[in-house]
Length: 95
Image 1: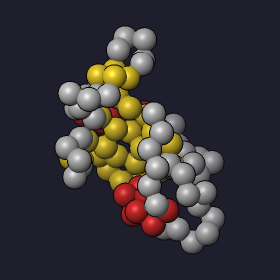
Image 2 (image 1 turned 30 degrees about the vertical axis):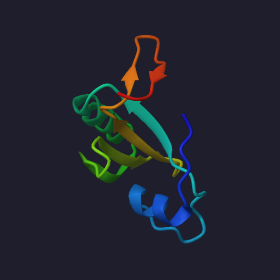
Image 3 (image 1 turned 135 degrees about the horizontal axis):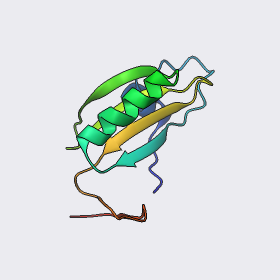
Image 4 (image 1 turned 60 degrees about the horizontal axis):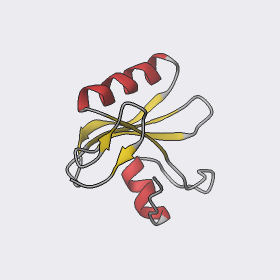
């Protein structure tokens, strides 16, 4: 799934400061529940990532947090209650 945001809105949502060094992209890892999002963020932090935005309820009705990996790549970990993630990892959009 690809979602396009304007650069300023993505930087604000991701919790990063865009001073020109940020690539203007945030990778996303979608999970099945808010608890899974918390778990992935904890694993990332234990592996050396920096939590940029702690997980919390979002304006779009989901739950997400953001981390920067040790190489500086920004990742969102998100639970979207409107998506179904199948056992094989495929995503069905909609209600």
